[in-house]
Amino acid sequence: MLSHDPVQKFARTRLREALEHSSAGKFLRGARAAWADAWAHARIPGKAEIKLLEKQGNTCADWTAVRLLGKGSLAGVVRCRFEGRVLLSTEHGSPVLRDSLIRDCRIGAATVESVAVLDRVIVEDGAVLRHIGACAGVAGSRFCLGLAVHPGSETGARRVFLSDGLLLEDCAAMAALPPAEQEALAAEWKARLHYCESDHAFVGAGACIEHTGFVEDCFVGPGARIRGAAALRHSVIGSLSEDPVVVGDGALVEQCVLEAGVRIDSAAQVRRSLFLEHSAAEQGGHVADSVIGPNTLIAKGEVTASLVGPFVGFHHQALLIGALWPEGRGNLGYGANVGSNHTGRKPDQELRPGEGTFFGLSCSIKFPADFSGAPYSLFATAVVTPPQKIALPFSLITSTAGGENQQTAAAGKNEIIPGWMWSENAYALIRNAYKYADRNQARRHALPETTPPQGSPLAGSFLASDLFSDRVAATVEHALATLSTLPPGLLGLLTGKEIPGAGKNFVHAHRLEDACSAYRNYLAFVLIRTLLWEHEDGAKPFQPVPERLSRMRMLAEKAGIETGNVPAALNVFVGLSRAVEASLGRDSERGTAVFSDYADFHGEAAADVVCLRLKAETKALEPVLRQRLAAL
Image 1 (cartoon, rainbow, N blue to C red):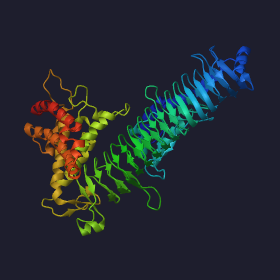
Image 2 (image 1 turned 120 degrees about the vertical axis):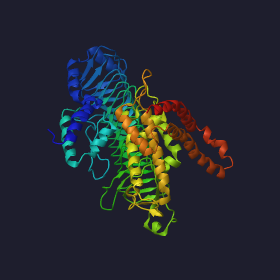
Image 3 (image 1 turned 135 degrees about the horizontal axis):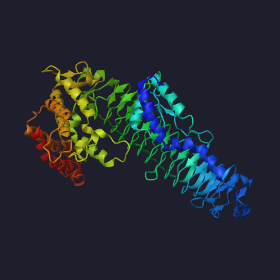
Image 4 (image 1 turned 30 degrees about the horizontal axis):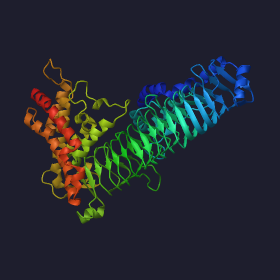
């Protein structure tokens, strides 16, 4: 029995469930028995069948080592060489085998053409293998099931054990376990994997592998599409027929688990990593020792030793190392160097970027750093940040450009503007909220916190977004409480000494009231979200459950809105559309000052699809909000 509760909870629930539902795990547990059973029930080909096979150009040193299941046709078996023990199953159709060396394999009603070596592979019905250098298995293989990867510190201090069937939260929980508990979990994994071994690789029903160099020691799930890849080695391709994995031109996959819907394409190289459902790597992107969350795409740049959450935009040449970022929903701009994890002594430093963080062009983030208390913050172009902890949400961190103050410039401090993303750049936040909802393809990673109950007026609206979740709201409430304790009348520049959440940056004292206003305004929307969350039974007057009523009253107090002041709350609600439109309008003002034809190609803010969508939703929700506010 394990002595640590966190390990007990994980090992006995999620670890067990993941392995029980793992497609690769199921295959491994029964592979040897299934092979032995099939071989025992198969028959040696008759003289007429051997004569037909030889007439069609096939060769074998010992035809008694070739066995048949079923009485289907062998007319499609042409110019092949058979070695070792080969089992051909014709129970559900006839195989098409041409111009290939086949050794120690079991093949169903599949197509195998021009495969230089097919060695120790089980190929199911409907699979297609064409023009492959080598497709081979190894004795005693687990593929990469149970392999430890190391997000965070590159010294391997944290471990995530690979398996298909894991969720992002499982990976984050594993990475957070203290070393002693990780050792206990490693022992649990080893025990559960003891009987998971196969002497054959696997290609599932309907999978297609074409024009690929090498597929070695891999579990290739049903419906997978592998075309033009450089090589796949020691990996689990957890494809589903209805949700296939795609590995394309020039891609290299080694010791990875690729979940359903994953795409690795256009010369991407991925090693020792877990790609969760509908994540991707392309355009030469490099990923190693990492977990990539659902709906995240890694292109062109490098991700190493990181746990990256959902919806992270990584479309340019950038660097991310040593990041524990399960919340995701952020962005890395071109040239962003988020990877100063080496002190010159050893690469053991880490970063916690925080939800929704945007790293701008050519910024340089030095470790250790913790921005998890400052969700949806933006690091501006070319900012260089020292090691620090920031806890002011929706902030803009920008360089002083050598100007504000000689003392500050000499100290290398940046300016932090708390609440700026909400007060001045709301368009970006609302646009992302819509984008994440529209582009979400994940099915196993639904967040109950952001899925309103059936019949809720918020279903599909911007207020259902993670942007207004309790975990983000908690950071805003904490920051507002911190700023509210500062004495009135402060002047000049304030640093982390006066405002601990500012980290190693300065805040202009005259911006404090704007920051507090932004935070109160945001909390008003959390209040509105809470008020509109529940489904209303038309036969009964609306009455929130006591826990929610208590929460709403507390939010109303923090947002500076009297519970019975319906007009004030409605004014805040409809004001968001104007704020979003105004934040986009500032781009138009800058653009038209530079380009005479800017308006011709960019259009007016009022006609923008995000602005129109938000305005329509606000209009639709306003009567419901009015009614519920009056019922409080």
